Each structure stands twice: as structure tokens, then as C-alpha cells.
Image (cartoon, rainbow over the protein chains, first blue to last red):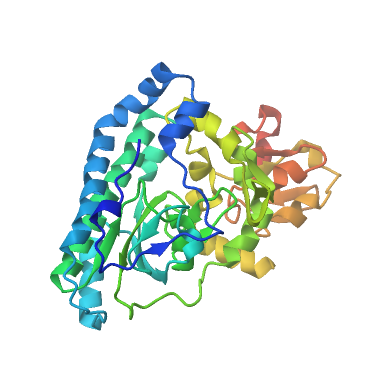
Length: 308
Length: 72
């Protein structure tokens, strides 16, 4: 299954930003299920509860791609502080948990993909803990796709909101995006990437969140200069709860080079992770077992920093 | 939830658990080491570090050692 791309809506006046030699190949979930899952019937059983939401996600993604034709192209690239406050207020009202700003590095763009603007507004929304507590389950996978879909709607609404004010945007939905959102969100200061590869936020839901973005040519956004959560990197070195909790043994205490590439080191072994993920209602065990999912960010921070 | 240090630690008091605890939640009493339930963040790093397998999750403490749940 291919997700809608902006390719066919790009005009000669658009300048695209492409991936580079350090970019990674994007992963398509249906391919993972095909490769590691227990066949069509098993895939149907575990993905049937979310098929209808999946369709809705695709509709939103199509809308995101096609709507770049509605960019006003007025050459307006400065946002006022009032407009920004209004944007943030609107985003919160439609369900966003947190907002960050950064520039997209070309390394973060998946191989062969492209975006229109380098300035990113990054959004997180919570995957409700009451539902994720039950993972892996029908309830949890429904919650996961509810957030995929809600973010699809949110980025389209935000794009529309900004276009109305004369700015150009490209909505980047949570599923099938052209950019790796976790490093993008880390760069935007919304949290830190844990050994489990998830973004650990300072909210009470910790890593139980989903990400999406809006790219824009607004160049005076309050871009994150210093991520206040970097201490979590040191904490993760001592905790290792995800390493012990992963049912597939797919999270290593020490990072490994991905496909032998020393530039991309991570603790997750993608192929090991794929097996329980493909054969059940997703997995999500690393999300719900993370110390930051169960504990209070500030309490952990204070105690940890006091020790070190 | 928190972790509890049980019987096998009595008289042993190996400090490996204290070294790995990210939040310094482990202290010593006359008998053995103790986890401060208020400070414990439930990461379980101490469980693996304990050389005498004395550490259990609160709900899994064997009946014989239930008294250690209220250790001070």
C-alpha cells in the first residue's frame, strides 16, 4: 500500500527539499506484516478492528497531499506573536498535547521522499493510558489508530488555519509521512529518544504519544535552541526497563549499527521487533513499560540529577 | 507500585543494587537493604543487579517475606 504523496501536485514554482545520502528508508507497516506476520488470515484478525479508521487516515493523508495546491503563495514568511499565540491556542483546542518548532534536517527525510518547506511545527497527542494499559489488545490498537486519524485531521486543520492567514504549508500526517518524526520531535525539544526508539516526553503519559507535523515557509518561528530533556539520555543508560520488558528481546542495552551503517546507531533491532508486532494487535509493550509512562517526570528528574 | 528487598538480603547487604538505582531509593537498615517505596520509580534495575535474587515487585513478594513490604 502506498501512501499519498505530494509528487503529482508539485508545480514548477515549488522548490522541494529531498532526502540525502544519510537518509534512511521508510518502513511500511503492511510490508512488515507481510514479511513477519502469520499470513493473510492472521493479519485480517489483528487489523480488522482498525480497517475503517485506516481508510479515514488515508482520506486525511490524501487531503494533506492535495491541499498543497491551495497554498496562497504570497511570499509571506513572518508570523506575528499574536498569530502564533492564536495558532497554539487553536492547536490545543483541537486536541494537541504539545507543540515544538524546528528545522527539518535532510537526513530525517526518508530515502526518495520530499517535502516543500524546512520549517516544521511538530505536534504530539496523547495515546490514552487507560487504553494503552491493555496492550497488546484490540482496545490498544484502536486507540493507536484513533490518534493516527486525529492527528491527520489536526494537521489538515492547522494547515488550513495558516493558509487562511496567508502562509504556505504542507500538512504531514502521522501515518505515511516523508520525515522520521521522532528525531524531528527531539530536535524540536518535545522530548528525548529512549532506547526503545520512542519519544519520551515530560507529560504524565511519557512516551505514550503520537507525532505529526506541518511544514511551512514561516521562518521566524520560535525554533528550539536547546532541548531541556537531554538528561533523560543518561537516565536511560541506567534504567534499561524497556530492554528487560521487550517480549522479543528486540531492545539492546547498547546500540547497534543499523545495516552496518555506523552513522545510524540504535538500540532497537527492527527485525526482532517486527515479529510480535506483526502477529498480535501491534505490541506497544515498550510504551507501557517505560519508566516515564508509569512515573512522574519531575520526580524522576530531581532524584536522578541529585544522584549524578 | 514499588520493589521490595526480601529475606535473601539479610546479612548480605551487597550494594550492587544501590549502585544501579537511578534515583538513590535504596538505603540500609540494621538487618538488610531497603527500598524507599516513595522514591522507587519501578524501573527494576535493582532486580537484575542483586546477586542473591532478593528483590521482588510489591505484588509478587512471597508470603514468607510479606513483612518486608513495610520495612523501614
